[in-house]
Length: 111
Image (cartoon, helix red, strand yellow):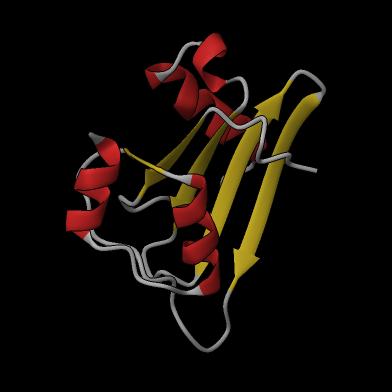
């Protein structure tokens, strides 16, 4: 499982993504922007267009993980951003619990 104490960075990607992508396609997309060293021990969060599904890609020295979380009756509360933003481990926990992340808070976290 993912050990959050080992995670270096958490990247939130909120542009529209085809959620039918598997682990190989996600890895190929990430390799265009990140080198293998940056991808090691980092979480990449992808949010569907309707905000009802999240995929989390994580890679460590033991292998690669693709976690999926789907909601039935509500949506994940994420801001609409143009680029990838980093968030904290606490913000990841809040996001998965349904708490809204605001643009202003993400700017403060990213500095």
